[in-house]
Image (cartoon, rainbow, N blue to C red; front, side, top):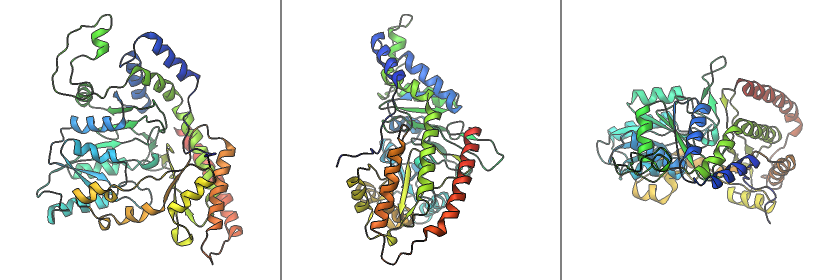
Length: 438
């Protein structure tokens, strides 16, 4: 059956279309004035002095670790609960990703397990694919789904172990965190790491079709990222071919081809202007899901921490498999039959053949991620999602849980009614307070 509710649908208006058409008519298609404008406005939006636009978050991450001087044979702490890019960019430079288990509540990297992995490397060497005396130089935390980590704790951990921090914020724009009530909100990218990397892929919170951004407070890191993003040239194409530019250039270092085009930036400029409004739309959808599904005993809904402004890139359910007669894959098939698109975020890296066979990680090294993986399903959540689509998703999830509940499971809907109503009131107040604060 064709999906009635897709997993994602991009929200593009006439502004983006008109800007792209104007770019096409301008005669300048590659990196140029639109990219410069996008970089400047994005830097302002996150509160960072420097922003460099590139063609993907993967490119931004690669350029970030290169700029920080990552060398072959060095180690970098990477969460196992992440997409391939977070670890593969470490391998690009011949370095070694040290996989770390996730926090049970948030799925973000578990700093306690990171400490255990570092201690393990010092005492028993680690998996077979790891050399003796591995020098660990950095870490790449990921804000899963757009729920930020406590970056003070990350910075403290990094300082204690002499590590740099590159923030994989592919899901986390716009997002913010604070240590507790009464503290100032800290936007993701506003000095939250040495370098923070964002994604503008088609299904992200804002999109340029394909694209990414690296932001930093360090002018030397920004300069290196910019240099390496376009062949290591002293001048980009706009600098060489615009009216006042010089045709000449020099190659300082062999770089990459990671620049963003003006066509893509034309979309991004107007997506950026709507970013907070679109985040609020997703927050409303998340609140609807939370309220409607909070008393469904067969599932666990994601946290809504009052000290986080969640981008709500994802709404990940966790199935209580012991309360269901079907597994996750069968649950997904039932969603598909009802016309509900969904996804899974993610198969942990240690369960992929490369990290298992080449680097030697085993499921027992990551008990939390291993146990969460079979339970995960991400529901549709995107700006522009209609009320009838949200209702269809909710009713479908409830229907599947009702039809496939384990025999003998006692349902106590009436017991939940009062607590659910109270939760609706409390969550609405909390979200309104955060929206005002942001």
